[in-house]
Image (tube, rainbow, N blue to C red; front, side, top):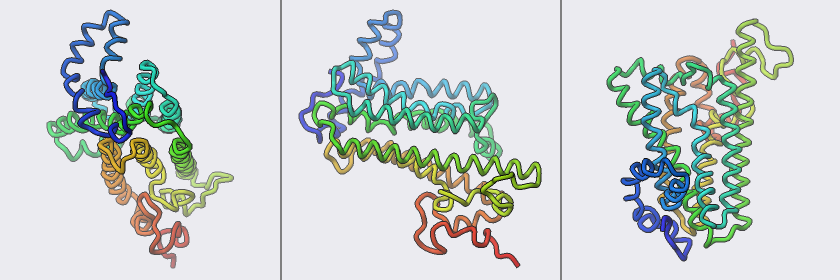
Length: 344
């Protein structure tokens, strides 16, 4: 069997029973795909006879050299960024499709796939309107890193992290969905599933609000810098725009409310898998933990650049928490009273 036949929810979270026996499939999969490439029926049989976690992992490995080659040819290292908002939903859809094909109950997986699609729509839209899909667009942080890392070392960094690790990461954050698949015939959906789903949707909604607030601010700042006038009807003052970074709305509570919401989505999925497998923790935590680690590192680097660009940003850092709202100091959101500096 491509998936284990288990009788308890707890067993579904057992790595030695749900993952380890199928790792060997990874070795033969490339050759089997080539042999089946000319027959749709053969490909369907291969799909059903391969453990869905293994096939998803193999796909993430398959994408890595593509990202590497395209990025090196174009000298543009945002290739993974362009599909960041899409791949997790592709993996979640894959588990749902596999469940359907196997005749398993998929109500829980169907709901998750819809939520995941909404998550993708929000992130893809925001990336698009910021110009992420325009030819030559690249995350400014890669350019900064290239200036501080010599070409041979940056190539190694591209191989290991940008192309491979990031691709695998987008697979690992969806591994809890594999556990939801395994428990589908053991644990029936109930109101708790609705609670987890609604919490994920709330996180997506908050991320959208944070994105919109940032978008409005950046557009107002761009207009202000070109005309030296605050745009008519703008919610921002000249002081806000001169400061250079957003400190109102959700951004008065958290320095990165969009990142907080983004991480909450995948933490919730992991907790959903724990609840469904009746465990306090399970091996799929590696996905959420890796995601949190990446956000900690990338946000630290982003703020390092931002603090050098905007003098008041260090004051903002002291008063407002990076992700979680600060409960000590000047008070939540209390930044605009002095605009970061005392006026004389």
